[in-house]
Length: 286
Image (cartoon, rainbow, N blue to C red):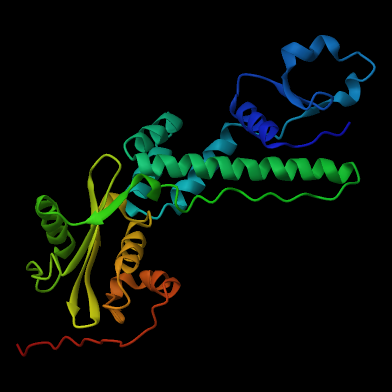
């Protein structure tokens, strides 16, 4: 017996897959998820044999593997290490994993979106296998975009005088261990924007100096706990959107070798390579 996979039914299936204590089936006649205890007595009926369909297989080991994939692919190294350590505990890994995410609301939001997307892919594969048995064509599904999911919780605005202590603290942190690690006098610059978390925490900043119609981005820094969430790119985009083409004709940005991965962001925003700088350290005699 065939049934249509609606968004509502997909959500019910997902919820039931995570319920390890119950036994559920698809009631194809009604197009709903039904609990075994509610349908067992009706199975001998004339349509009972074809009416109920097993849900996609999903158990705790599948959930553990899903958490492992999320942790391994998380871009922030600090949070990635915490998640990986939680999964390596041996016992209580699910609780440990959730506790780590509870301390990082942005990461938790990404986890829920990741889990929802990946489990719905499993459901779609299962449903398309059924459609193949029914002699029907497979269907596609476009998951919701999650790229801006976390950024919705952040506020981007101009630097205020009261923000300066937090800005300088982050700047000192980012310059630790660097050659000539004194504070850069270009912070704040002629144009400085900051990122603020939903809870009001200082998340990062971008600072640029102006020379006639040329703008040079000198500083782009993000707090360690917020790295890998797209904050740096969002700061750059907000800076570019704030510029008046009548006042600024060209924007420059020096990219440290340690941040080469950010070149993909620059390419997306229309930047092209302008100059490559090389350095040679000469050993002093004796």
